[in-house]
Structure formats: C-alpha cells, structure tokens
Image (cartoon, rainbow, N blue to C red; front, side, top):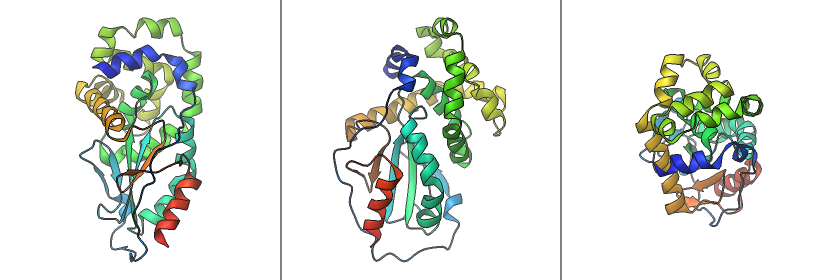
Length: 246
C-alpha cells in the first residue's frame, strides 16, 4: 500500500502543519428555481457513495457538495464547527443540498482517526466525524505527550501493513476511549484499525482526489462535480451557495 508507506514517512510533524490550499476551478450550476423539499428529514438520510465518501441529504438535491477533509487539518475542524448548523438547517433539511465527506489522508494520525470515524458505517459517520473534529486539540495534545520513541518503534512497515501501528496511534491519542463513548467498543475499534480493506479504500479516495481533481490541500470542496476556486472556509462556501440559490 504505497500511501501507507508515504504516510508513515511523513511523521508526526505533519500533524501540526497548515492544511489549506487554493483551489483551481469554480464549481457551477444553479438552484434558483428549486422548490424546497421537506417531505423527508434529509439530515437523517446518510449513505455511503460509490466514491467511498459518506453523503448526508437528498441524493437528488440540485446542489451536491463534496468536502475532501483531513481529521488532522485545523482548517477542516474550523469548517466543521462553523458549518454544521447552518448547512444542515438552511440547505440539507430543505432538500436543496447534499453534503458528502471524503477523507483525504495526510499523516498516520489522520489515517487512524479516519478508520475509526468510518468504522460503524453511514449511520454513525457524521456524529463521530464531528466529535473527532471537536476533539482535535485534545488529540494533538495527547499524541505530543506520548512516547515518540515507542510510536516510531511501532511504525515498522510490517506494523503499518497489519494495522497494528494504527492501534498504537489510536491508544496514544486517546481515540479508542473517545469512540468507545460513541458506540464503538475496543474490540470493534481494533478490528477497524487493522482492516486491510478499509486502508485500501482510503488509499483509493486519496488517489482519486489527486488524479481526478488535483486537490491542493484540505479542505477542498466540489460543487456538482467541480472544484470550487479559492474557497477553504464556511463563509466562502456559503457565499457560493447563496449565489447559486438566488
């Protein structure tokens, strides 16, 4: 798994680096003539997509938003905090927009957190994802306070391949305890962290993001399949959504 070796080589320093980047296209389409559809509680309609992400909302919404996100990206955490309420209340619940998260892995800790966020499937993804972002600062503090020599020793190619390295990261960062309070017992968490299929799926999402969209950093947003230029926060994305809805 080439991505796993690259992630291992990045090391813990990558966790605290900047993660934003300016995008290269505009995103498009209009929803000006769309009538709200409140026939269902769209916020509760969550599915896994063919591209490996998790989508909340009306699959036929005229505005389809995708976020390439990293759980160790501070800008992504800020977006999650600022966007969730207005996005769900003003756009998703109205059937106007759907919102899909695709993990873009940047480092071993990010990979560990993503495996756990995705562990219990679509129904539980968004609550765990939001909690991960809310817990980001504590996760960083825990991993920095951990025995770095022991973490490096646990990050051999064999341990990366088997997933045992990610168990070590999860324990050091307090993530097994965190998800334990969100319906993922330790035995299940360990299964997800050592799941080869889950690792390969995250690698495929990353590869597609780079080859198809050439994303420059996280968060990067797509609207209706096109990269949105120069938008890396909720204020910028909401302005684009309001423009489309006018």
